[in-house]
Image 1 (cartoon, one colour):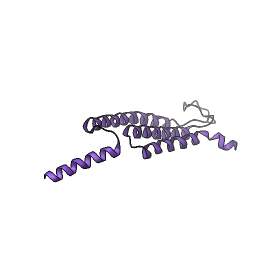
Image 2 (image 1 turned 90 degrees about the vertical axis):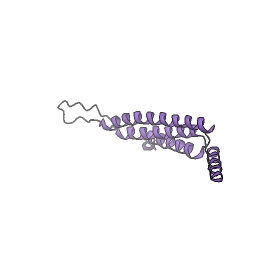
Image 3 (image 1 turned 120 degrees about the vertical axis):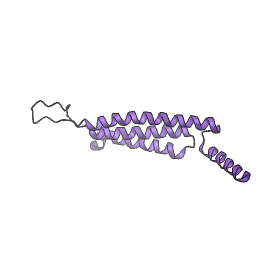
Image 4 (image 1 turned 30 degrees about the vertical axis):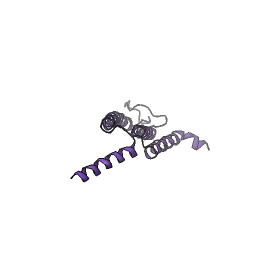
Length: 127
């Protein structure tokens, strides 16, 4: 039991991942889908940072002592880059949602599909 408690961070990652996945699959609102994707993305960041953690590890500054346990900084650096890319991608996603709302007047998936199908049927009947 104590071994399971020691890995609480992985349970948190799984819970966040499933919450984000549910928000993407179950919701028709595009903004809610973007929030779900952001939650899912955050869980992946936490997973990589958790895997990169070394118990009793220090910063990789070589001092000449061969018995020192060092932590690998690469996962943290990669996640920092992924966070920047994720924020930029999320901003583009929200900008696209705004443009869809300006063009069609809705951000609900099912309403948008009906509007687009009606436009296509109107174009086909006029041609």
